[in-house]
Image 1 (cartoon, one colour):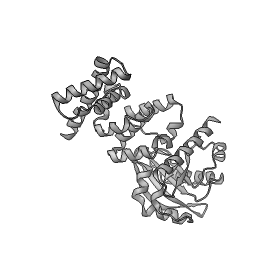
Image 2 (cartoon, one colour):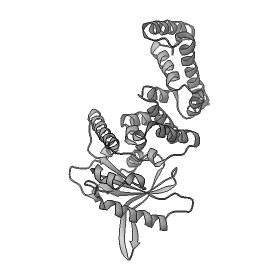
Image 3 (cartoon, helix red, strand yellow):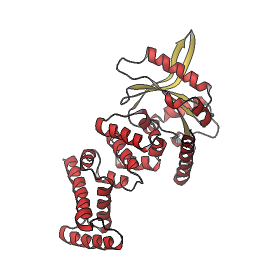
Image 4 (spheres, rainbow, N blue to C red):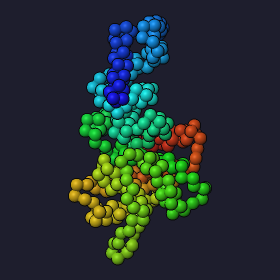
Length: 318
């Protein structure tokens, strides 16, 4: 019942925005448009009561402008409320809006989670934000039409792990234990679909014991995800180590209907030139940095902006 009401309300607001745009404003803006919306707000409030303030009407107009395809709105509104769209509408680009709309739909975020994902710059931290716009649009279209997630939509860089409560100096085992102690928070940062499988996964190769830090499974990707934790910068040798883990998992743990395992090497620093030279983007190995220190929101946002800018600069130099 509540879902039906939500869908009806969202579609009503979209139609109001459409009619104001096309029949009243006729694409007019500036002072003339402001005067019309203010007058219309007064008339609607007198006739229908609350809910038609000038600010609300402008939001409905923006809603239609940002989401001109009624079919997409109708599908998304089965999972997203009007409050979700209110958070998404002010975003800067169509790609960002489409990303958050589809990820919110498929991962079933509530409004608070959506707001947190936007504040943490989730879009900018995914590989899809660094792709050419046309390729990114196609990937989002596949997600929209087939509910099919790609690794570039699932994995991010950096990961914000400021909830771990680690001191300035710590070992890899401390990082692993802190993640296990805060597993629910870690899973939220990883994203929906991840299931914890095992810690210190033992592999015997040529009679020698090897241990993978953490093993997860992603239900949507249908793949095992091997996570190796490093407290220093990325080193080229980590690639060979992860490749060994992935081939072993492929041989001994992967089911017939599953995809190839994916490796995620989490490092305190990236060493981007080494990563680029090793062409890790073309493999099933992801390298990401993590932030463990608690930072005020403004400072965290600045740090994330700097990181994203550096990543894009590296991409442009390829």
